[in-house]
Image (cartoon, rainbow over the protein chains, first blue to last red):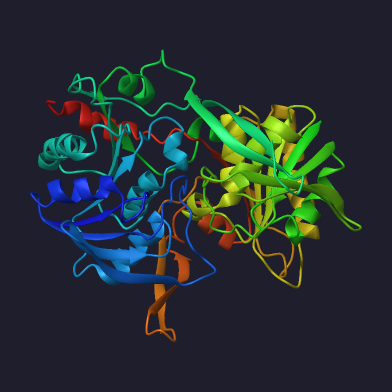
Length: 247
Length: 247
C-alpha cells in the first residue's frame, strides 16, 4: 500500500514522526508536509505565490518533502508532482491536539484529508489530545489499530480519528460519533503594544456541548472517536426553504 | 437592521465597497475586513499571534475596521469586540470571482459566513464572476435583490449567492442549486529560481462537472445561484459503514 503522510504542525513535529513509525508497518510511506507550523490553517491554499519543495532528512526518523505551504497545498503537490504513484491512502497527522466539534473547520489536519478526497483518495485525519508527558508514540499505535479495523471494509471518503488523553490510562474504547456543531466559548485577551495599538489574542475555545452524544463528549469521556466526514456543504433542509421562495 | 460586512479580498477591494453602498439601503453597516488580500484563506484563523485592528476611512466610500487576520478572524473579532450590538445579519463579499463547487472550501468569503453561523447569526456569502469591465456595482444590486427575497422568510444558517458574468447582459434568473462536489482539473506550472529550486505555481481550477445540476453548471449558464450551506460535516451514510465494524 502506498501511503502519503502529511500534517499541519509541520514536518518537524513529534506527531508526524510517531505516525510515520507506525504507518511503515502498513506500507510505503511518502512524507510531504509543511515547512512551518500551520495550526488553524483550515482549508487555506496558496494561490498568489509558488510553492517551494525541499527534500529533507530528519536524522533517525525519515526522509521527506518540506513544502512552503498549507496542508492542503502539500496534498495537491504530493499527488500531482511528488508521489511516484497515486497514493492508496492519505494520512494526515498526528495533530497535536484534538480535532473535534467545530475545530474540524479550523483544522489543517482535516483539510488535508478532505483535499485527498477531492482526488477520490481515501483519507484519514489523526489527532490526539496533546500531553507532553505521554508524547505521541502510544497515540500512534492506537491510530494504526483503528486504521487496521477500517481497512478490510475499505475507507470511504474521510475518516476523522481522535485519541483521548492517555496520561490517566488507556482509552475506554472506540466510539463512532457525529461531529458536534455547537461551537465554542472563546474570547479575546487585549493588550496594548508600544505604539498604543490594541492587540487581540484569541483565547479559550471550550466546547459548549459536553452533554450531547458527539465527538466532543466522547473524547472528554476518554474514548477514541471515529467520525465519517463528507464535503457536500449543501444544507438540504435549508434548500427546501429556498425552493419555496418565488424568485 | 445591524449588518456586519466583511470579505476576503481585503478592505480596499472594489467588491466590498460596492456591497457597502447597496447594503446601506437595508440597515446600519459595520465593515470589519482583512487588511490584506486573503484569497484562498479557507477557514483559517490566527492562533499564535494577536490581531491588530485599525479604524480606517476610505475616502468617498466608508469608514471601517482593518484587521491583520483572516476573514474568519474578522468575524470573531467583530462580533466579540467591535460591533456595538450583535449583528442581525453578516454579509461577506462581494468576492472577486465565483465561489461555487469545491471552491466553497477554499473560500475565505464563505468561511466568514460559516463563522457567523457558529455564533448563530444568519449570514450571506456574496461572490461574482470577476470581469474588469463591469466592476461590482451591478453585481451588488443583484445581490441585494436576492437578499431582499430571502429576508421575509428569515435567513436560516448560511446562504451562498453567486452572480454570473454580466458583460453579456443580465442574469437569466435565479437558480436554487446544490454545491457541486466534483472537484477541479488543475496542475502546477514549474519554474526554477536563481537558487536552482523548483517553484510550483498552482494553475487551472476548471470545474469538472458542467453537465450536472449544480452551482457550477448554473453559473456557467448565466444564472444567479443560491445555495443553503450547513456546517455539520458528518457523513451519515459513511457513519452506517463505521457502525457495522466490530470495534
